[in-house]
Image 1: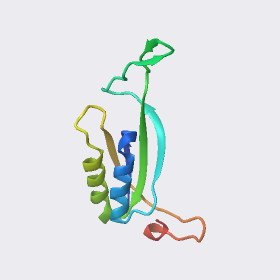
Image 2: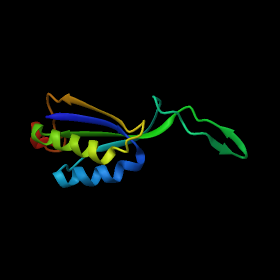
Image 3: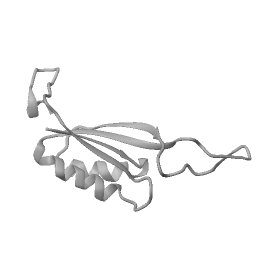
Length: 112
């Protein structure tokens, strides 16, 4: 099993979610996060005063899938999340040792 974490543009979430759903991914977690990197925050106005926020809003996805689905999920994130601009995000892939379903005690891929 693989755990795929991706930090993506919030505006690309719906397209990525639709793509991974077509692959058969039944569950994912997502969080609204803030980050900073090479992309600089855009200047915004508040009550007529210009300011530059220190952090950029992003969405973090966490998806655990069987090994055979991992490359498809990664391709969905790459293709649907890409705008070609700085700040499109990052993907991290980890091996998952064990998974348990709390409700009935399923173990491994059956717990997904």
